[in-house]
Image (tube, rainbow, N blue to C red; front, side, top):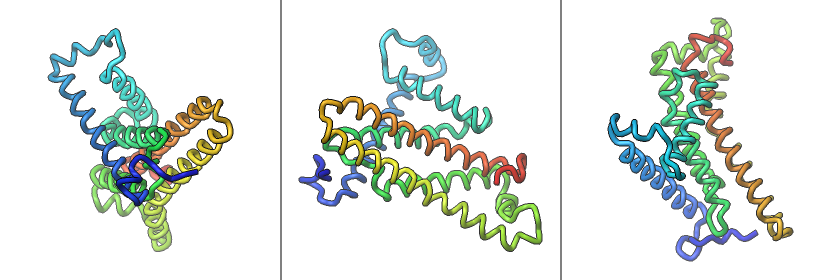
Length: 237
């Protein structure tokens, strides 16, 4: 399987190619969000979009996506977790688009570089810890890492710190290896069975969606554990 992409004549390093495409996807998402925001306009104008358009539009497609994300967030975090949807939704859309773009022949597979994946994972790590401190306060949030048994705190605290820090690594590796394996299988099957390329690409599309979905679910769970310790106590661990 060749690693050559349409950027190879201009950028030799494959990781830099993926960073460039990842940046372009991020800019495209920002532009899309800005466009939808302008289309929706003020509160009075938004009422015009309650009834869907007769033909598919970008606003209509994003409405379906947002509705699905709200439903998923409500099932994991409850309705009080809707304030996290701008972040979790951005994570889902970026990973999904990055994975799907990688299915296009000649395009770099963005989520097969650790630099992109670690960046997303680190952003998730910072975000759920920030929200945990914001919800509970700095001291109570740090205290919960010591566990409920005071005389075991000397052991539980460092174990919990290592465990929570390793989430950066596990999020990164889970996405990296699953997408890498998916594209290896995809290229191998399309080389062997060119006539059956369409079903293989459908399977690849499903894997792309599932990896974005799983990453988003884990992000939501980390937010749940970080912000609701005082309500669930030991259940979070």
